[in-house]
Structures are given as C-alpha cells and as structure tokens.
Image 1 (cartoon, rainbow, N blue to C red):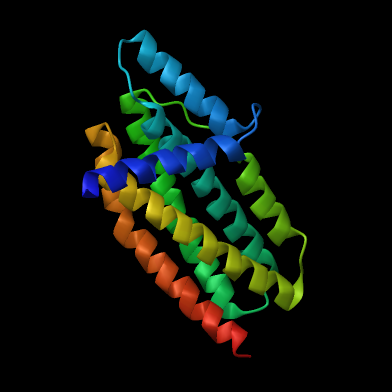
Image 2: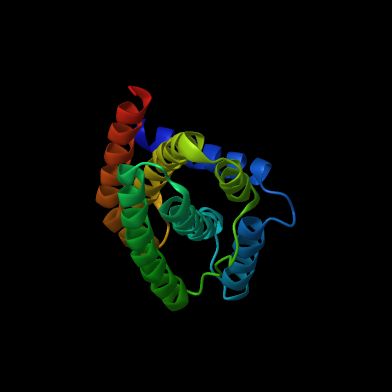
Length: 190
C-alpha cells in the first residue's frame, strides 16, 4: 500500500513537472539530455532521477539569485540575514549536486527553469516591505515543494547517489522552511 502511494506520488511529480515545463525549458532540456545519455548506456527508468536533479539545480540557482536580491533590497535585517544563510547553504547544495551529477553523468541546467524564473520575476518586481513579504512567501512555498520532493527522492530515487544526495539535504531544507515560516509569521504580525 505504501509502495503504491509512493509510486503514485512520484508519477504525480513527473506529470506536474512535464505539464509545467515547456519544450524550451532548461529543466526539461537537461532531463531529456540525461535520460538520453542513460538510455544510450543501456540504463532505463531514469526519468524521475534526471528530472529531480535538473529541478534541484534550478531550485538552487533560484535560491541563490533570490538571496542576492534580498541582501541588496530587503528592508528587514532578519530577511537580509535569512538571505545570507540561503545563499551560503544553497551554494553548498549546488556544489554537492554538481559533484554528484558529474560522477553520475546527469546533465544540469545552467539557468532557471520557467517556473523558477516566474518566481524570481515576481519577487524582483517588488520593493520595500512588499519585496520582503514576497521574498519570504516565495521561500516558504519553494521550500515546502523542495522538502516534499527531496523526501520522496530520498526514499524512491533509482540511483543510490540521488537517494543519498536528497537524504543529506532533507534536514537542512526542513530547517530552512521552519526559519522562513517563523519569519513569515513575524512579518505578517507587523
């Protein structure tokens, strides 16, 4: 029963990801290149792992870029502090992801996927307190999605490298989410 639910959840993620990616989306392109390489090497069923790795790369790019904006534009010192932490932590996650991807022959996007670009643009187009609120709401929403995806891949990834990478990041993502939610509550009470 649990295995059936996990399979359903993984398929749901794939369907959602495919429906939100256009053919020129950097995430989809990287995923397709990875899958093609794996299939040429005789390795099958790598779609979900390849999609996760491409999504993770784009999500890390988003977090680092948003953090840079927040460090420069945020009004609240707490938001600036969170941004510094996000930049450092997601920078390390990016380095670890690149190492894993290079060793395991995954292709990574070098720019934001379409959905991540939309999130970035939404925050970048604001200023003042509106910027702070938008940044925090985006961080909370993105980390809720990331945490669910990483937890799923830690359990259901095909390759051990992907499972281990995802598993190592779950506590940090959980911590990021808690900090961002706490800050969101604090800002909303002002």
